[in-house]
Length: 125
Image (cartoon, rainbow, N blue to C red; front, top):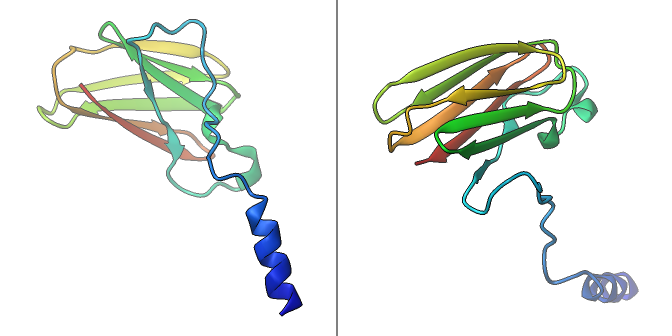
């Protein structure tokens, strides 16, 4: 009984609201679309890969990807799932790249292939 009371007491001190972990990028405009990029499969060293390894933004028909750590050779595939249009790119190292998209309305997918882990994100225009 004491353990249950102690657990209830500790739970009452937990915050009732969640904290938004997304940081504000001062380069972005208020109408820029921030896209969540997440790992698809486990890595050899899962503690080394975090969601912030890749950041993605869409603005003015351009998709910008920022790689915050060296992932070696990276292949990028962007597909408008609504009409089948596809864009491909390759980069290496810690870098940023922009891919000029058509700007057509639709559901887009982003797949990033690395030797450690594949990443995936999607967005709607």
